[in-house]
Amino acid sequence: MHAHHGVLFLDELAEFQPGTLQALRQPLEQGRVVVTRAQGTVTYPATFQLVAASNPCPCGWLGDGRRPCRCSENAVGRYQRALSGPLLDRIDLQVAVPRAPLAALAGEAVAESTAAVRERVLNARQIQWTRQSCLNCGLQAGALRAHAPLRSGAQGAGAVGGRAGPDRARVPSRLAGGANPGRPRRRGPADRGPCAGGAGLPP
Image 1 (cartoon, one colour):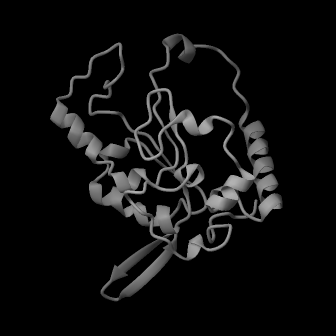
Image 2 (image 1 turned 180 degrees about the vertical axis):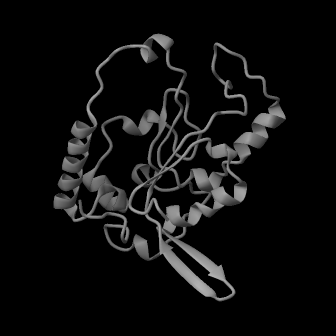
């Protein structure tokens, strides 16, 4: 997978074929992809950060408040069911983004340069690796709470295992107390020790 040890960005997530979305569950949980054919089985490493975006409904206006949604209730249900519970349980942070005012988009604010952002990211990676010989993304729940605790009151920012509101974020389940108890997470070799195997590379 080309996104191994990188970022996999999927736009219009709910428009992907259901089989494609379900295939994401294995690499998100185990950090690898197993392909089985008549000739044998091949395992590919696939440790990546998934970033995805999706509209709330086919027309995109559900819950906008200023423009009515044109979709039927059945159409909205079919669209949202494409994102299954087991897949959403593997996405730690879910944020609803309201429409930005036109004035904010047309402003002339000077953005931070790419070089400055890169330097900040590299510094953060170096701090994580020096502290625990692993990046935060590779930490298991206990070590994650010890090295990267939530700020006071952050657990109230959203409901783990539920749908976040328009101005709230769903906090990482492994940091806020575990996965949705209705969908137990299978454990594998990557769950032993403070770091998930191969998930945290050195800078």
